[in-house]
Length: 296
Image 1 (cartoon, rainbow, N blue to C red):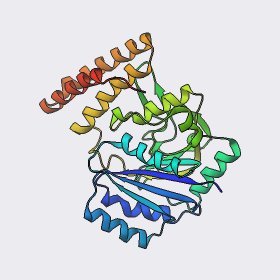
Image 2: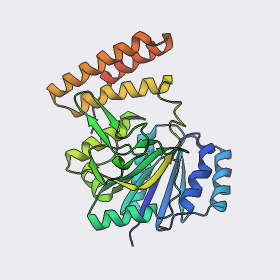
Image 3: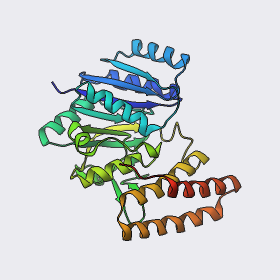
């Protein structure tokens, strides 16, 4: 029987865990193991997980308590390695600030993957509590150095209801076959957070894989719950630092120069409208992005 390892990274996630546990407990597919990689462990979280696992029974889970917050990429790698060592056929990387009501969701993803020899699969993802799309596929814009979501902020419509293939999607909810990890390896831990999935998908596409979008399947995302939003100092730093690093790492000379030029020019516009702390954070981000030693 096919086995899935579910990997989610916790960071001060107590407020969203009940919906997460409830969604998993309702799934008709039961041959999974959940790896809770906790970057902010506490006695309160321990107690909450015990309560929720009783209220919303799961097949099985492991709660890994890290002594420091070393980021999403490293946390995902911890869970991926545990899942592969436990002989999982697929790994589902998923946020915990999500919920999903379709009891057949995991069954459908697995069945489609097996029947059609697919290795990377995503559902349609809405903003939580709405029918407004957060994700219906994705695309990497290599000459600009960033990735975008198809359907972002759009009302759902028939346009987004066809099975399609893409070269990018975030790992908010992505089913990945063992074959992909064997060919591509693990995530680049230099990213900490943001662009770790962009980098991974760029590497997977280079190996011939593609992302299959299944619009029948639905997930609801409580966006930016753990990171403070797109324009927090935290996000300004990591989005910009990692964008520069991503371009330096993944593209040949000419594409790299074009993408870096576009990035710097658009950051200059941001700099002119930012407040003092934001300006300082942006400058440090760009400097650090050029300083990171390229790995993998």
